[in-house]
Image 1 (cartoon, helix red, strand yellow):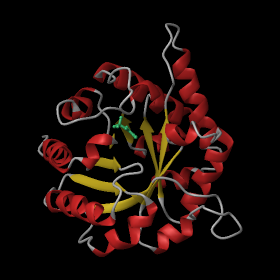
Image 2 (tube, helix red, strand yellow):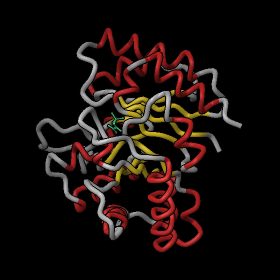
Image 3 (cartoon, protein in one colour):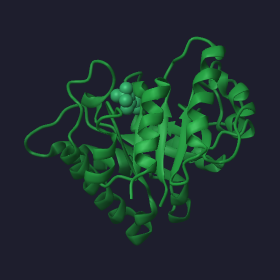
Amino acid sequence: MKKLIIGNWKMYPASIKDAKAKFSGIKKVASGLRNVQTVICPPSVYVGDLKKIISGHRCVLGAQNIWIENEGAYTGEVSPAMLSSLGVHYVIVGHSERRAMGETDELISKKVVAGIKAGLTVVLCVGEKERDLDGEYLKLIAEQLTIALRGVSKKDLKQIVVAYEPVWAIGKYALRAATAEDALEASISIKKTLAGLYATAATEVPILYGGSVDAKNAEEFVTKSRVDGLLVGRTSLDVVAFTEILKKIGNLK
Ligand code: PEP
Protein backbone atom coordinates (compact mmCIF):
# COMPACT_ATOMS: atom_id res chain seq x y z
CA MET A 1 0.00 0.00 0.00
CA LYS A 2 1.21 3.56 -0.76
CA LYS A 3 2.31 5.52 2.30
CA LEU A 4 0.18 8.58 2.99
CA ILE A 5 2.09 11.74 3.94
CA ILE A 6 -0.09 14.70 4.86
CA GLY A 7 1.21 18.22 5.42
CA ASN A 8 -0.89 20.39 7.72
CA TRP A 9 0.13 23.98 6.99
CA LYS A 10 -2.05 25.36 9.80
CA MET A 11 -2.42 29.15 9.40
CA TYR A 12 0.79 29.56 7.37
CA PRO A 13 2.22 31.05 5.18
CA ALA A 14 0.99 34.66 5.22
CA SER A 15 0.93 35.18 1.42
CA ILE A 16 -0.35 33.29 -1.61
CA LYS A 17 2.97 33.93 -3.33
CA ASP A 18 4.79 32.04 -0.62
CA ALA A 19 2.14 29.29 -0.56
CA LYS A 20 2.51 28.76 -4.33
CA ALA A 21 6.30 28.58 -4.08
CA LYS A 22 6.16 26.03 -1.26
CA PHE A 23 3.50 23.94 -2.98
CA SER A 24 5.41 23.90 -6.28
CA GLY A 25 8.62 22.81 -4.53
CA ILE A 26 6.83 19.98 -2.73
CA LYS A 27 4.87 18.89 -5.81
CA LYS A 28 8.03 18.62 -7.89
CA VAL A 29 9.45 15.95 -5.58
CA ALA A 30 6.12 14.30 -4.70
CA SER A 31 5.23 13.79 -8.38
CA GLY A 32 8.22 11.51 -8.82
CA LEU A 33 7.38 9.20 -5.91
CA ARG A 34 5.35 6.16 -6.90
CA ASN A 35 5.03 4.74 -3.35
CA VAL A 36 3.82 7.88 -1.63
CA GLN A 37 0.53 9.76 -1.72
CA THR A 38 1.25 13.34 -0.71
CA VAL A 39 -1.54 15.59 0.55
CA ILE A 40 -1.05 19.27 1.36
CA CYS A 41 -3.65 20.94 3.59
CA PRO A 42 -3.17 24.70 3.14
CA PRO A 43 -5.42 27.40 4.58
CA SER A 44 -8.70 27.12 2.62
CA VAL A 45 -8.34 30.57 1.03
CA TYR A 46 -5.35 29.26 -0.97
CA VAL A 47 -7.04 26.12 -2.30
CA GLY A 48 -8.38 27.63 -5.54
CA ASP A 49 -4.99 29.00 -6.62
CA LEU A 50 -3.03 25.92 -5.59
CA LYS A 51 -5.45 23.67 -7.43
CA LYS A 52 -4.36 25.36 -10.67
CA ILE A 53 -0.78 24.20 -10.22
CA ILE A 54 -1.60 20.57 -9.39
CA SER A 55 -0.52 18.04 -11.99
CA GLY A 56 -1.35 14.36 -11.57
CA HIS A 57 -2.58 12.49 -8.54
CA ARG A 58 0.55 12.04 -6.48
CA CYS A 59 0.28 15.41 -4.74
CA VAL A 60 -3.26 16.56 -3.96
CA LEU A 61 -5.01 19.03 -1.68
CA GLY A 62 -6.76 18.66 1.64
CA ALA A 63 -8.53 21.07 3.97
CA GLN A 64 -7.92 21.61 7.68
CA ASN A 65 -11.54 21.86 8.76
CA ILE A 66 -15.13 21.86 7.47
CA TRP A 67 -18.58 22.79 8.63
CA ILE A 68 -21.42 20.26 9.00
CA GLU A 69 -23.74 21.68 6.32
CA ASN A 70 -23.07 22.35 2.64
CA GLU A 71 -24.76 25.78 2.57
CA GLY A 72 -26.42 28.11 5.04
CA ALA A 73 -26.18 31.06 7.38
CA TYR A 74 -22.92 30.05 9.06
CA THR A 75 -20.75 33.14 8.89
CA GLY A 76 -17.07 32.38 8.48
CA GLU A 77 -17.45 28.66 7.82
CA VAL A 78 -16.39 26.67 4.75
CA SER A 79 -18.50 23.72 3.62
CA PRO A 80 -17.48 20.24 2.49
CA ALA A 81 -19.33 20.71 -0.84
CA MET A 82 -17.43 23.95 -1.52
CA LEU A 83 -14.08 22.28 -0.93
CA SER A 84 -15.06 19.26 -2.96
CA SER A 85 -16.13 21.48 -5.87
CA LEU A 86 -12.66 23.08 -5.80
CA GLY A 87 -11.00 19.70 -6.21
CA VAL A 88 -10.06 19.05 -2.57
CA HIS A 89 -9.80 15.32 -1.78
CA TYR A 90 -9.07 15.14 1.95
CA VAL A 91 -10.13 16.98 5.09
CA ILE A 92 -8.62 16.96 8.58
CA VAL A 93 -11.33 16.66 11.25
CA GLY A 94 -10.89 16.80 15.02
CA HIS A 95 -7.40 18.30 15.08
CA SER A 96 -6.33 19.03 18.65
CA GLU A 97 -5.98 22.74 17.86
CA ARG A 98 -9.69 22.76 16.85
CA ARG A 99 -10.66 20.67 19.88
CA ALA A 100 -8.86 23.30 22.00
CA MET A 101 -11.14 25.94 20.40
CA GLY A 102 -14.15 24.05 21.75
CA GLU A 103 -14.93 21.31 19.23
CA THR A 104 -16.58 18.39 20.99
CA ASP A 105 -16.58 14.72 20.00
CA GLU A 106 -20.25 15.17 19.02
CA LEU A 107 -19.50 18.03 16.62
CA ILE A 108 -16.55 16.11 15.23
CA SER A 109 -18.83 13.15 14.59
CA LYS A 110 -21.15 15.39 12.51
CA LYS A 111 -18.18 16.79 10.58
CA VAL A 112 -16.99 13.26 9.79
CA VAL A 113 -20.38 12.39 8.30
CA ALA A 114 -20.56 15.69 6.37
CA GLY A 115 -17.10 15.11 4.89
CA ILE A 116 -17.92 11.59 3.78
CA LYS A 117 -21.22 12.70 2.19
CA ALA A 118 -19.35 15.32 0.14
CA GLY A 119 -17.00 12.62 -1.15
CA LEU A 120 -13.98 13.73 0.89
CA THR A 121 -11.59 11.38 2.66
CA VAL A 122 -11.72 12.31 6.33
CA VAL A 123 -8.48 12.35 8.31
CA LEU A 124 -9.81 11.91 11.84
CA CYS A 125 -7.38 13.09 14.52
CA VAL A 126 -7.41 11.47 17.93
CA GLY A 127 -4.96 11.63 20.80
CA GLU A 128 -4.55 12.23 24.49
CA LYS A 129 -3.46 15.47 26.19
CA GLU A 130 -1.30 13.60 28.67
CA ARG A 131 -0.26 10.10 29.55
CA ASP A 132 -0.85 8.23 32.81
CA LEU A 133 0.67 5.07 34.19
CA ASP A 134 -2.60 3.12 34.11
CA GLY A 135 -3.16 3.40 30.37
CA GLU A 136 -6.31 5.53 30.76
CA TYR A 137 -5.17 7.46 27.69
CA LEU A 138 -5.84 4.43 25.51
CA LYS A 139 -9.43 4.38 26.78
CA LEU A 140 -9.78 8.08 25.97
CA ILE A 141 -8.57 7.49 22.40
CA ALA A 142 -11.03 4.58 22.05
CA GLU A 143 -13.84 6.85 23.24
CA GLN A 144 -12.86 9.65 20.83
CA LEU A 145 -12.92 7.15 17.97
CA THR A 146 -16.17 5.50 18.97
CA ILE A 147 -18.05 8.80 19.18
CA ALA A 148 -16.49 10.33 16.06
CA LEU A 149 -17.32 7.25 13.96
CA ARG A 150 -20.91 6.92 15.21
CA GLY A 151 -22.44 7.81 11.84
CA VAL A 152 -19.91 5.91 9.72
CA SER A 153 -20.97 2.62 8.16
CA LYS A 154 -18.68 -0.20 7.02
CA LYS A 155 -18.98 0.90 3.44
CA ASP A 156 -17.91 4.45 4.34
CA LEU A 157 -14.69 3.24 5.91
CA LYS A 158 -12.77 3.62 2.66
CA GLN A 159 -13.15 7.37 3.21
CA ILE A 160 -11.62 7.27 6.69
CA VAL A 161 -8.02 7.71 7.77
CA VAL A 162 -7.19 7.84 11.50
CA ALA A 163 -4.31 10.05 12.65
CA TYR A 164 -2.90 9.38 16.09
CA GLU A 165 -1.70 12.76 17.32
CA PRO A 166 -0.74 12.87 21.01
CA VAL A 167 -1.38 16.48 22.00
CA TRP A 168 1.75 16.61 24.17
CA ALA A 169 3.88 15.92 21.07
CA ILE A 170 2.33 18.53 18.75
CA GLY A 171 3.62 21.97 17.86
CA LYS A 172 6.51 24.12 18.98
CA TYR A 173 5.62 23.83 22.66
CA ALA A 174 5.64 20.02 22.49
CA LEU A 175 6.88 18.29 25.63
CA ARG A 176 8.84 15.84 23.49
CA ALA A 177 8.35 13.89 20.29
CA ALA A 178 6.62 10.58 20.86
CA THR A 179 8.83 7.54 20.54
CA ALA A 180 8.23 4.93 17.87
CA GLU A 181 7.11 2.63 20.72
CA ASP A 182 4.53 5.20 21.93
CA ALA A 183 3.11 5.39 18.43
CA LEU A 184 3.16 1.61 17.95
CA GLU A 185 1.22 1.05 21.18
CA ALA A 186 -1.40 3.63 20.21
CA SER A 187 -1.74 2.35 16.66
CA ILE A 188 -2.29 -1.22 17.90
CA SER A 189 -4.89 0.05 20.33
CA ILE A 190 -6.63 2.06 17.57
CA LYS A 191 -6.69 -1.04 15.35
CA LYS A 192 -8.32 -3.01 18.18
CA THR A 193 -10.98 -0.35 18.68
CA LEU A 194 -11.71 -0.25 14.94
CA ALA A 195 -11.91 -4.04 14.81
CA GLY A 196 -14.39 -3.96 17.69
CA LEU A 197 -16.54 -1.48 15.77
CA TYR A 198 -16.24 -2.88 12.23
CA ALA A 199 -14.73 -6.40 12.45
CA THR A 200 -12.42 -7.26 9.56
CA ALA A 201 -13.49 -4.27 7.44
CA ALA A 202 -11.43 -2.15 9.84
CA THR A 203 -8.13 -3.45 8.45
CA GLU A 204 -8.52 -1.21 5.42
CA VAL A 205 -8.39 2.01 7.52
CA PRO A 206 -4.95 3.64 7.25
CA ILE A 207 -3.44 4.83 10.54
CA LEU A 208 -1.05 7.78 10.60
CA TYR A 209 1.22 9.19 13.27
CA GLY A 210 1.52 12.96 13.82
CA GLY A 211 3.42 15.08 16.34
CA SER A 212 6.85 16.71 15.87
CA VAL A 213 7.68 14.58 12.83
CA ASP A 214 10.83 15.75 11.07
CA ALA A 215 13.31 14.47 8.52
CA LYS A 216 15.28 12.69 11.25
CA ASN A 217 12.50 10.67 12.91
CA ALA A 218 10.02 10.16 10.03
CA GLU A 219 11.45 6.90 8.76
CA GLU A 220 11.53 5.35 12.23
CA PHE A 221 7.85 6.08 12.82
CA VAL A 222 6.91 4.35 9.59
CA THR A 223 9.16 1.32 10.03
CA LYS A 224 8.98 0.74 13.80
CA SER A 225 5.46 1.97 14.59
CA ARG A 226 4.14 0.26 11.48
CA VAL A 227 1.85 3.16 10.64
CA ASP A 228 0.59 3.76 7.11
CA GLY A 229 1.86 7.30 6.95
CA LEU A 230 2.45 10.59 8.73
CA LEU A 231 0.65 13.83 9.50
CA VAL A 232 3.28 16.55 9.52
CA GLY A 233 2.72 20.07 10.86
CA ARG A 234 5.62 22.55 11.12
CA THR A 235 8.03 20.56 9.00
CA SER A 236 5.58 20.49 6.06
CA LEU A 237 6.23 24.24 5.63
CA ASP A 238 9.95 23.66 5.21
CA VAL A 239 10.22 22.47 1.60
CA VAL A 240 13.71 21.00 1.97
CA ALA A 241 12.93 19.05 5.16
CA PHE A 242 9.47 17.94 4.02
CA THR A 243 10.67 16.70 0.63
CA GLU A 244 13.44 14.88 2.49
CA ILE A 245 10.71 13.05 4.44
CA LEU A 246 8.87 12.25 1.21
CA LYS A 247 12.00 10.85 -0.40
CA LYS A 248 12.96 8.79 2.65
CA ILE A 249 9.50 7.24 2.90
CA GLY A 250 9.29 6.82 -0.87
CA ASN A 251 12.53 4.84 -0.87
CA LEU A 252 11.54 2.41 1.90
CA LYS A 253 11.49 -1.20 0.76
C1 PEP B 1 -0.12 18.89 13.44
O1 PEP B 1 -0.41 20.09 13.45
O2 PEP B 1 -0.96 18.06 13.08
C2 PEP B 1 1.20 18.47 13.87
C3 PEP B 1 1.47 17.20 13.94
O3 PEP B 1 2.10 19.48 14.18
P1 PEP B 1 3.68 19.37 14.37
O4 PEP B 1 4.19 18.40 13.33
O5 PEP B 1 4.17 20.74 14.16
O6 PEP B 1 3.92 18.85 15.75
